[in-house]
Amino acid sequence: MCGIIGFVGTTPAVPHLLSGLRKLEYRGYDSAGIAIASPTEPDIVIRKAVGKIANLDQAIASHPLEFEGPIGIGHTRWATHGIPSVQNAHPHLSQDGRFAVVHNGIIENFHDLRKQLRELGFEFRSETDTEVLAHLIQLHRADTLIDSVRAALRLVRGTFGIAVVSSCFPNQIVVARRGSPIVIGANETETIVASDVAPIIPYTNKVTFLDDGDIAVLTPGHFEIRSMENTSVSRSETAVDWDPGAAEKGGFEHFMLKEIFEQPEALENCFRGRLLEEDGTAKLSGLRLDPHDIASFDNLVITACGTSYYAGLHGSYAFEQLAGIPTRIEQAAEFRYRNPILSPNAGVIAISQSGETADTLAAVREAARKGATVLSICNIVGSTIAREAGRGIYLHAGPEIGVASTKAFLCQVAVLNMMALLFGRTRRLSNSEGVHIVHALKKLPDLIRSVLEQKDCIRKIAEKYAGCSNAFYIGRGYMYPAALEGALKLKEISYLHAEGYHAAELKHGPIALLDEKVPVVACAPLVPGHDKTIGNIQECRARKSPVIAIATEGDDSIAAFTEDIIRVPQCSELVAALPVVVAEQLLAYYIARFRGEPIDQPRNLAKSVTVE
Ligand code: F6R
Image 1 (cartoon, rainbow, N blue to C red):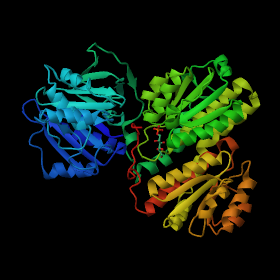
Image 2: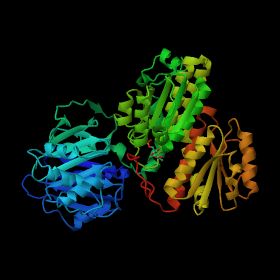
Image 3: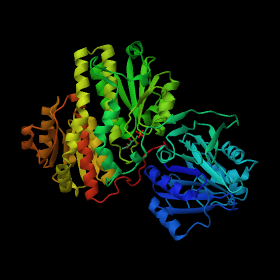
């Protein structure tokens, strides 16, 4: 949540900060700001604006900066403390105007600190928790910027990723991390820091992630990491294989649409080198599990949030079906506080696109504390969850910028299916059953391409329903997580009220809401349970709800029960949810577009949820 950027080099910092902020805008977009320092100027200059980065561009164009400095920090905000406003936008200045701070995370004791600082004569200009940091650094000013920041942070409870510039120490940026990601990259003359990898890629593909408790000094082309106890710290570099264009729209109107269309390729990258056709299994070296380890699991717990949770629900079915391992799924926010029972031979699988989601990270820590083997499924290489789990699988889906998750979901399900295959082959699946599954997985990219080819048909259906206010999504078996995911996509980008329900559960209450104004999207391809779903569709029709069926090509019988049909290709049960979800993504996308909503940056949302 929120995006941090910092640049220290030899050319004016503003263009670097603004282009970095644009790449981070998906993390939060309530307001944005920059602060510039110069070795030759006694002051720090600041510009801020409410809303998107374009407004900040305008604020700078209409009030040009007093000077151009080669050192600066910037921030795009997702409000936690205080409404989106210019006063609450970061960077925040200390009372003397000599220190500027940008911050992600939450200072939990900010009320007490604020009271103490007020008693000492500090005046607050914002409602944010961050402003206390700026004043504390001024109050604890020492001989170096790093010592000043360290002294302030010692008084702080809570989480932070911060970047600080100062006109008293003008050639550097100091950054620190506890619970909120900070990534640094440097080339010969420039050092860039950000809250995620995307803005660093144009400068270098070698990035260094700070660990909790690290604090670093950045100078042009160089950085040094130390601990809060002031010992030297060394962190390894991670090579990122994204090309710089991957974080651009590439001719698509929205990142979300681009990412929907990237899915066949994302799946190919995800499968590359991992499917062993002859042996009918998967090779997932990152798990670092031998057959004996796999055989020793007596149960699995999958934990995640949001879309990743729905992928996990799909995974829980696959593990039980293919590997015969009892598997439960828990929302990460529940897992961390519920004191869950974990047997000594439990495996915990944490799923997170960003690898930074606070609740999922806390669940990982709780599971590790209880002695479980923790495995991660993340997209972002080197992210906190991936590093803390220590063993896991990367999606290789490339950067996902659209706030609504699309290609990450497909790759998460693909990875879970591969894991279930590997576990199944170690425990009870035969070679021929394994080979059959490998074939089904390998076909997926082409199956997804055939759904994408129907975009015009899906757009027409979207136009017809764009004016409705409520919708239901129903499904059974693997189509149940697909229904939940379809409803989530629609509500988050179109602001329509949508609910995903098990097709059989509808009649236990929500069917009361159905009438001719409430469409039902039925996930109804030809997979086991299809006839029962048809029965549930009839129940909806009997309440006059228009039904949009997502049905298998050639299944002509369904036409008798539905208004509109989106066709998906015939495929095996294990993978059938993925073409259905792609159809749902396009439906949600086009409905939101007809309604004129800001698809890549829906209101109130942020891409990476680093607060609980
Ligand atoms: C929905 C969406 C969110 C995320 C959730 C978890 O489209 O993107 O529901 O899935 O916030 O995020 P990660 O996977 O980064 O842990």
